[in-house]
Image (tube, rainbow, N blue to C red; front, side):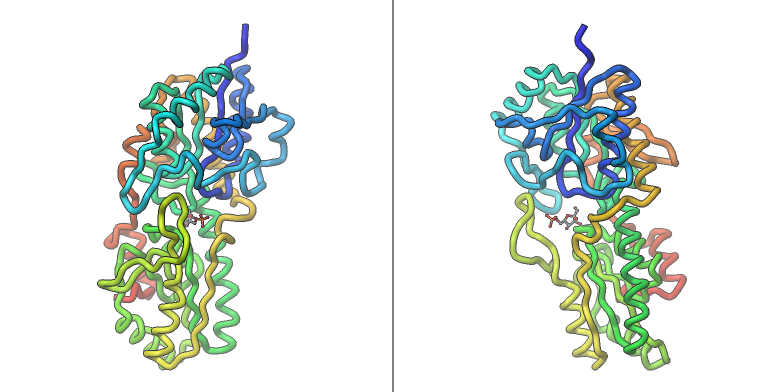
Length: 360
Ligand code: F6P
């Protein structure tokens, strides 16, 4: 009898921990006697020219601690499913049909899609078209509803904290203001957690539009009262009250690329306080490198959870992580709403309680 075959793919922007999920999926499937096909470069591998490789215990050995994804990914191409804040695009039916046929021809009986909101929207569309799909939530942004956290987030936060530690010594030596621009799109989780872990003095997030006047007053007071430096973390999606997001040239997946707010903040501070200010844009360093142990463990739990969902035939569901347990939620539910920082939530209150300013 033919072995039960499943497929796995990684889609959207990469993040640390993808390989941990792949390894756990393969190891867990193998204990059940299943075969695993890894589709190359995300959903693109399902389309002509079809591209996959058989994933074995041998070729997934030693990848747990390695960043990136051994099967490649893309956040553009024929399957791009996201347009902008809250906008979702439909994948054209011929593309869906071709992917379905590939899976049928290869005898793939279930597909594990590891991705963020755009990629999981695509997974859900495949499911609606009869493909037995399960999802695994991935993104450094941590902006997916229905899961307390996504893997990759902790590694990104670690990167922000490391950067702040380094910036602190140089800022203090020069009595400077340093602005660190971090990723996160329309959610401020990376800035908030990274800022708190790295002892930032100011954290600017999209959920709390800030005032340049209040920000400048805060910086001025601090420095006049003897602070040797001021560290400001600004999320790429943050904006001043009444202003729009700051965007760069170029698009990803039909969506404008965010970025540039760090320089604007630095410029305004120098103008308004006369303080020497420098900007660092942390960029893709947050997505690269080794996963933290927390992301490795979460990745392992998610991979095992995905195989369990297949065993239980919970198709159209995504592995979630709530109350320290992995479980299942419908993908539709998970991608329907962006998870953003509650401005009155405990994390913001904690930061305020240790003297962090949100520029308001
Ligand atoms: O969604 C993850 C993310 O890293 C965002 O934080 C960031 O805005 C975006 O992807 C960058 O995408 P790209 O790698 O296409 O520049």
